[in-house]
Image (cartoon, rainbow, N blue to C red; front, side, top):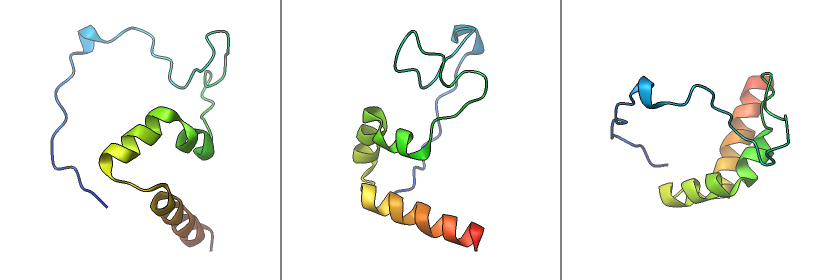
Length: 76
């Protein structure tokens, strides 16, 4: 697992848009509004997430194993 030791750059609140919609695939869709979140599989299957994982050197199998082990510890 890779640990990022870089601090994020500061973000000016004035430069952010007043409304930020995350996770919309279809401009006509209302999904992910009103506090609905994407499923874990939807996040993992997202092309941007796959590129981010690849750039960080995180294999899908390792992530899924970590999720499965963590889920087992929390449930059982």
